Image (cartoon, rainbow, N blue to C red; front, side, top):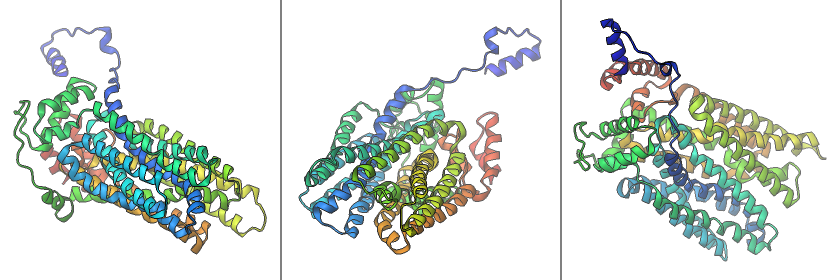
Length: 528
């Protein structure tokens, strides 16, 4: 309206009254502290997974000594939590649509609390495995719901920053797990690992208590016809009233609610049932949805297939293969891995909304391929040498740190940000559940096969294999994944659908957005 008024004045010849303030650069929108607080609390669910990964890397050394279990049993113990989490992530989509995003987070924390207590008091391998089964269900719920809730409550300009929080807290959890390993390593063997695992109950208690202060997701509220509640949440989590209204209009359009309906509670058009949602997602998807699904499943697969869990979960064994024999030195080196991983994920949170998802992803995977290749080379040299090779030991430790740093600066956070923002509203919960399922299955396979793999093809060969998978992943990211920085969640169906020719859709969409918001159907017709 202001631009139109200036044009009208120019045409009519009326003087344009300009002030010095008119020449100032536009003010940047203020950071919404309430949205940050909500995202922080929601993403604490990810600490649960991170802590389990970190603590198990050291605890399995003591569990093996105490319970006299084999390497195969160690692999199963370490990796099955990822498979158990499939149950939670599979149920989370339906649960979050039924009781809401917020109470699904409460359910996640409660289940993990029970699992952590069972693991902490387990007298033997059988009950320990049952505790991991229970904890895995809680982790699955948390992995799916934290990014969904966060992306739905985040302002558009801060979405990348806030939706990277789950990965931040995974890394923080890993670091806490490593520190717990070192802190309790001085206790008697039969007590130390039980304290390490049982301590995981504390974050879940904090999560359940803190969640009571959070609002429900505005998108879920709109899906239930509670426009008044949704508008109040949007006003509190947006950078301005205008942005809140803009977000509300977009959500109403996606939910099929006519724009003229503005009552606090409205009747929502009858939604297709869950079976129809799965049909739209898998059996009869549009070209855009099919592309979105391939992108989401692909990025989750390559995140884990490139071997990050082998580096993080078995870092003490890697350092042992490099020649570090002391328990204390191995655990201290592992703590260094956690520190580097956490520091670089913090850097990534500030880069996501500045340089975009795609550049970070490509730099990250390229750096991981580089570090995995040299890690494999250094371990091969050490393995084939009869004495200590100091330069190879130093290179091995450096490449482990490089690998987790490159992972944390891109692939780690971008995977969860990207998949939580590209699915359409009506398919988001189920789509994210599928992504989490692929992530956990791949992670479970990697975790449960690493020891057997390196015994079969040498430890250096294992990392050469991960590097090869990383090369394929880089090509997939470059050809198939469009940039989503700055796009509204409702833009995604227009942006996707061209596969490797996605730049054409991006150019048309950008041109269509330069003027007025325009007609979405008109933009879609240009793309097609």
